[in-house]
Length: 236
Image 1: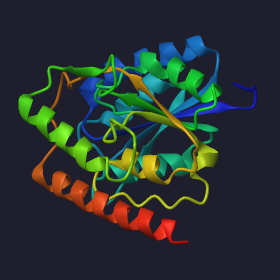
Image 2 (image 1 turned 120 degrees about the vertical axis):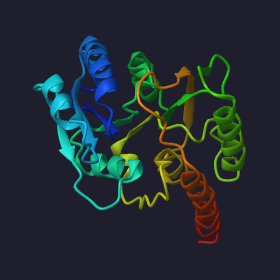
Image 3 (image 1 turned 90 degrees about the vertical axis):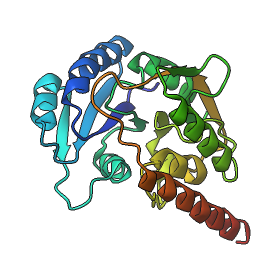
């Protein structure tokens, strides 16, 4: 990594106070060991559980909290807000519930330095998997990835754990429907290659899952829109 580059880690949150108290100290320890310049951006959807204040206290000078005051909560829109606010040359996106291990970040950066345009934390390549994942969610996740193959070669195409250089998103219109911002990036980013790094997805320890029927339907609609996007782009 060149001396002029630094990392912006974007973490969308809503009612994650119990999880970020574990996650942020781990994340800071990992980033400090890399000797890289970095910032951590917590994009909080006006959590009523005091997530924003606790996160800022834990971050200190290591990052900042941006509160989205809006009528509609959205993980994807929170990530887009983080990308707009990011000062870093490298964008890292991860969940705030502790399911994405920050210890993988050095391997993500190594992958970028090897020349890959996009690095994805993957449950569905050799060495990856899930821990304490309910059977219903396993089935939904696998089915969603099967559907996602229509628009990308990424095996874990529903992953929300990824890293990309910010320049790869320049002039790219990201318009996610629902919560799968990663899929938008995988399809639309200006990259020539990608690498999937295996990890074990640990189901959230605290708080409830935010997965409902509506996001599933939104995901199917998102894939349909991306099919049209790819088709129109191929005709140009």
